[in-house]
Length: 510
Image 1 (tube, one colour):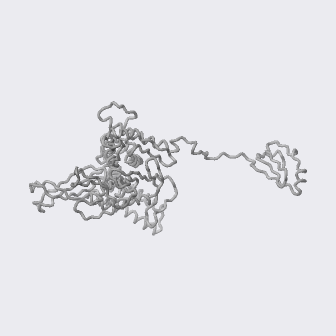
Image 2 (cartoon, rainbow, N blue to C red):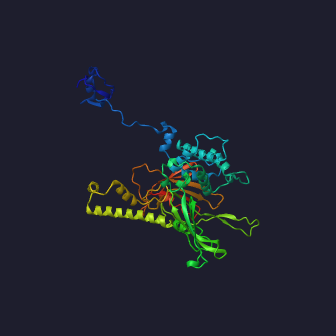
Image 3 (cartoon, helix red, strand yellow):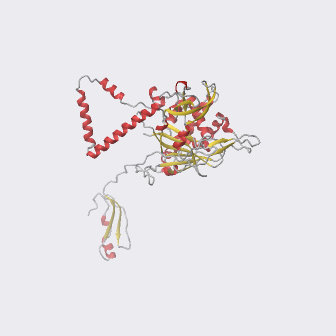
């Protein structure tokens, strides 16, 4: 063993020796300076040497270790739980809706595209509306830049200026609780007026399906309403039905059931179906008086984002009271919902025809895939067959590229709404919920529940005894944000004093 060997050793230790010697061996270290004889005599046996280190240059780590506290706030916000919003005094109605809309990227891009970077407080008549949207845009930017709770003070102030009804105060001067659905509807109504620039959606006029603003391109649905008179004869002497199309930005799940009905609504599907049908009193030209008409509504254009409101609040007349003003009440009953929503039965005949074609094609593809799997065919063979078919067709006479394109186009199912794929089958997945807790319709507490972005490669487990994936969610209790699971969301059905769903946000399932 020579000292000239290129050894980069961290330490040298003599074991079983009372006087341990430690040192660093470098290039050219003189080993004769160590008295091995004396060390061996004291050890009363063999001398053991422990060499620690490496003879080669240590390699740098491929990935630099970065500690969380060393990251800037905007980078910390990307890896930690999303930030919450401070309650500015009964502003949970606003905080919950803002958090649910936060994950809808096309909506946020539309805000950026349709609001100036800097606002002039002394602008035109619509300046207040644009200021409202610009402040919401800035609030989202603030939430993205930090993991700490954000104060929505500026947005709350502008909201109360834009919607004076939200600035009501109680007897002691405290801000009054407001309705989350009224805030949601007011926000989208205003956005529909001010977001005419659709360039951020990168969609053609054909793909927009008549939508002329960001709000309606994302949330808007065309409702086809048919009114038929119940009191006129059928046949040639019948009152002709009245058909019209209206734009809606939400569906209503009718919990109460309506006057005179015996329907007991226990599921969201039943409530939506009930809300799309009913009886009204309307003038009949044939009878020359008011008559009873049957109202039937169906979806004639589907949205990328579908919002369902549970009709938990209603106005109850109080004829025996002194002021006969009535009172706002809350329905506490349990109404179940699932993580997906099939709207096929709620659609018009033309939309159902397109959805059925997409479903039939998907079913045929799945059947063919299963058949091939059972027959032992592999993907590579299937690809070779397809390539052979394409090559064989190139040599056929009379079959031009234009004809091939026309045939392919004729087989494509028309899209049934803006931003929806041609093969959309009418299935939506739940991604956000606004809940209300408490028995008081003018009080209580709102919270937002939002599905987490899937960034993990870990396989998601299913909820026990079901085929539903138990995915990650976050619950936004104002400034407090906590993780939860899909199974927690599906418990928000009502029936007690616990948080219960009020607004369900669904997005088109891919």
